[in-house]
Length: 477
Ligand SMILES: [Fe+2]
Image 1 (tube, rainbow, N blue to C red):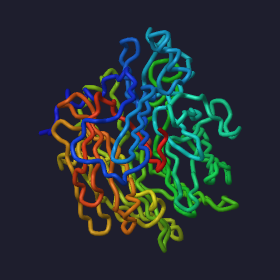
Image 2: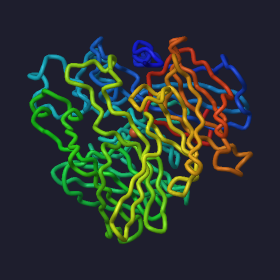
Image 3: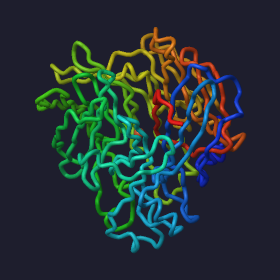
Image 4: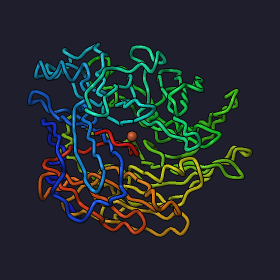
């Protein structure tokens, strides 16, 4: 029993070839006049190149959407990130690079063997910090864009901090104290290296420290508290040979090892950064963390966990995904006791959920409200995200708004209401919803307190399902 059709869901993964620039006029409800600023979003916009379908949506070129809100009006602008690979493939009208998640060059394994030259697709997140707008992809350097036009300005080496080919994670965290931007870079290998960077509001680098981590690492996200940067090292191995011999993408060679524990690596954010602690727990596979905060015993950490690594089966088409055969993401709470080096865990939300977000003023602090994309049905099985769910972590109360059967949501983003700062949930939640009824996307504005619908902005087109985005209080038009 499902509340959607796979055809409706898959239609949100049709390539969007066009770029747009217009005032949004088809609106139900009213845009709050005090909602002022910019929502940036990033995600794969092209799902095929030269009529050759990509094997996995995460291999798609980054397409940036910018929604500008001012005086009760909203403007939309979209542009592709003009990476070197995007420009070359647009010109050649064929796939020229192997994708991390399994997309291969045409011509079979003989045309892919020993080609380890990956394409920086800049498709995962977008960050505005100290005047720089950066499209992020974790395995390579950020691309810098002009926030006024979204024109690509080129690879940004962050004033020489990065070297050619260096990674820079797509999951930066902003500590509200400062504020301070904290990000990491992972170089995975037999021994892996995690480097942590901290930048002050002006953009100046104020801390950098590197740590050797035993074993292969697949770490997509991390979380911070005032005193710690926390990483979960998933229990995985990397099988190099199918990748080297051109049979599989690098991401498909990551093998989940359910018998092994997840290592929780806790790195101090204060000099001399060297009292790194490692705890272990059975946690499955983790992409994203919701939040963490310090407690009397240690750290409380909330994360989305999967029983196993979600993957596309060999020779399967992701557009035909049988969701019931993939483990759902579930929200778990981990209480870390640093003195006893022990971990206790508790399932907070068993139903399928992903993309946890919160009021960013509470990042790394004790918090109450969490917003997530979630499946519409309460079947404890995987399904597309069709609801925006709010969880009160103190009372356990849940509120949700569903867009089923024909709507499919993306990551919710919380925006503070500047005129009502009295409570953690005074504000709005924004999400791009693919509306299969129209074959186009809507931007929905929700009241973050009761999750009621404030306004629906009907776009003239669809935006392929995105990954991550961010809110900036400035307008750039
Ligand atoms: Fe992510």
